[in-house]
Image (cartoon, rainbow, N blue to C red; front, side, top):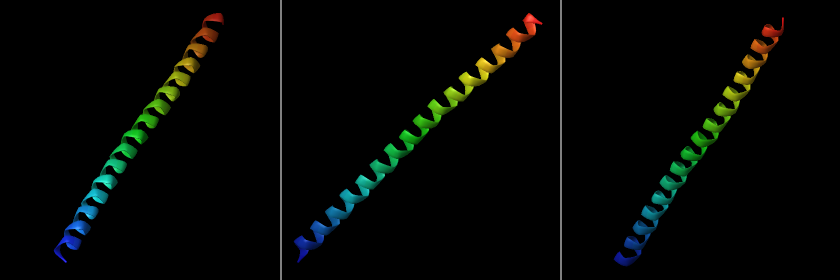
Length: 59
């Protein structure tokens, strides 16, 4: 009887650890993607700004 309880406890613990690692990796993944998106947005904004400056110079 005790062995079964210990087995279940171990199973729950490993599941908790698995959930924590999954959540951790998910958070890292999301922040990574958000960082890439922000970089892309900044890049496009900079390109727009340089385009505006170039057109102003021509005028």
